[in-house]
Each structure stands twice: as C-alpha cells, then as structure tokens.
Length: 112
Length: 112
Figure (cartoon, rainbow over the protein chains, first blue to last red):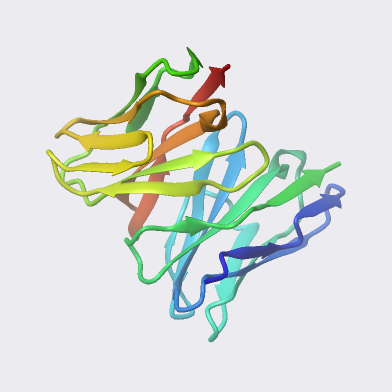
C-alpha cells in the first residue's frame, strides 16, 4: 500500500499570508490527524478528523483549521501566518480513531 | 505538566553496545503506548504499539516492553543505521477526545 502523502513538501511564506496543506491517507484509512513539530515544543497535536467530522482539537489558536473530504483526504489551513508558525507539519492516518497512526513525510513551512 | 517523559535526551553508543531508552508516563487508564523512529527531515516511522503491562514486542534489534508506569525500548547490538530520534507517545484524553501525546524524544547516535 502507498503510504501517507503530503503536499507540498516545502513552503516559504511571509507573515500575514495564509497557507493550505494537503494530506492523502493510506488507502482504507478514515482517520486523519495533524501535528506541528518544532525543535522547542516537539510534536504537538493539532486536530483529528474522522468521517469528515473534527473529533478533537489541540490547544492551538483559531487561525489553525482543517477539513476532511468524503474520500478521507484532508487539508489544514493556517491564516494570518506568524513567524512562530514555522515548523514541520505532519499528517498521520489510521483506520479508525485511537488506532496506530502512520505518518507522512511532512510539510516544512518557513514563515519570513 | 509533562505526561510523557523520555530519557536520556541524547545517547551515544558504539556499534554493538546494547542499551535501553526510557519512556515514563503519568496517566491512568492507558489506552495505548506507541514507539516511533524519526530520521532528520522525515516523518516518524511506526515501530510498536503496546497496550498492557507485561506486553513485549520485538523487531530486528529492537524490543519494546511496558510496565504500569513506563516503557523501555531495548536496542541490542546497534548498528550505525539505528541512529535516529526515538519518540514515545501515549494516547490521552484531552478536550473532546483522545490524542497522541508525544515525549520530546531520545536522539541516538551509533558510531562505528
């Protein structure tokens, strides 16, 4: 099976812009979670989607949002980018919530 | 308060020198503990899932064990290609649902 794919792999944006990241889960996986990874904070949970519904959300401001489509593909959006949003954004999929998650390669976002 | 703590933060081993990485957690009602390996610039790669105290799982030179308060990742006769950051995560209930709570990781370097 193909693994989790994320696009784009790299992004450079400037403060105040917005960005949309995409994630395609492993075939048959219906749960998609998003994480932010930074050197200082490590891996932090952003949100989880299952059957097009957000099931859980981490402690991030409302500028971070996401959605899931009927084919389980997911997107996350960050509006009004700040310098501190520079990070590796990781998507993970699992067949169902609370099951083992498999990660994609990530999208490296740099905000200037 | 950190609920998942990994130690040591960094570990340097000679090739063939066995050792253990520790992951301690402060949570009641464990619903799953996960080990991942992450290479620089890549997404975490799934290694093991453990659910109950006394459980053990093995894969090549790696063996994961679980007690009521901690998990160990034993590395037997490591090779340079085992160099990576090893992440431990616990499934925790937060906000409106369960989410993976990651430790900060142990950075392992195996020298020839």
